[in-house]
Image (cartoon, rainbow, N blue to C red; front, side):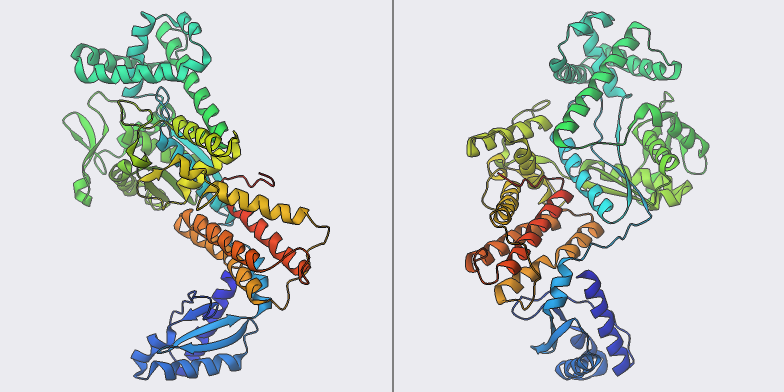
Length: 557
């Protein structure tokens, strides 16, 4: 439908130029179904400049359009003060149902970076959210023809590692890596997460512990510089780092996510240090023994890129990351998805990079989101009582699914969580209600999964093969009209990087089909073959849309 829409917009623009010698940007919108398939207010726009009644302008324009004989338009009508409505032919409408979304990223390399968990720390609900949204956005880029690379970034060096190691050494009674063998595999992740909390509290409350943690942080950088895997402390570090990656991989496998590459901060820190130091004096400057970027010169704020101890901060590591991603992929576009708290931070980092590598800054898009909150403000599990764990969101959905439907279906559970996240516009806080998310009624993932299974069931119940759609009846045309919007919706979601547009469309489509099915018999009707074609188009569209969201479309439920 999008190509058809663009062709009609161009045809109207040409007619305007031919009649009045003016060039105008024409934009077709979708009116209520009773008025037509497209509408334009171009006559009202022209009337002001022409000093003419807009309805007269509309009449002249419609006459010219009718004379030009666009084969896709069955009827032009004028409404109100001069709105022009266009109703397409059945043939054009049916053809639009088979249209593919635009390949706007064909031949382009896209790097999608999301999730970004830190080893030695727990995965929270934000990691789950960014994983789900990042996957959906990456899917949209793939649909649009892009060569997409999904990557992950996390801190295997830094103060949080020192905090965790400090607490782990207390737990082990010293540098005894052999004692790690006593920790059961299923207890490793929570064991490290609890150590991080204890280390964080000690760093904040105990000056002696703080000094020890700072020393451990330096020691970890040394392990990487010297490639030390043999000293007792290094063995503890490398073993626990590997445990973290095992924990991440297990989680990603559970939610159906995979990454081509995981960039550890230890790999980008050196690149960031070198890059920042190379631009001291022209981009960065010394301040109290540290190296900073004066963001105030760009209406931002100052941030430290190398601290007074000569260690790279998160900022320098992010500089190294973007340079490493460029070296690895030579991307046309890089999309980074984080929480809202990183917004101003990333503005400074990208502004600093813009000073010496403007093409990389311009090619990078930073998307942010709010906090995942349980409906009613309930907190199930947390670090220090205020951070919801990723696994608890999944477990809550699984429990609700079993309570409501009496079954444990991971596909339905994941569909419930993913859809509940994706249907909300990216940017703000995310409200999650486990019970609502698994409902088979209303705007939910399981509702759409059931709608797909129900449509496939209809097709299995007959040996009649779907036929061609011709001479559409009113109810059929209404459903075809909605089906024809799919490619246009996908293009909009891709352009705006907003998967919620697809969720809204799929729910509206399912409602439209329900209305059609309620008033139009399919199997056994005199239009059975045509209507079976409609059912198949509907099921295929649901399946395609759910796949873009990373949600399975079961044939049976």
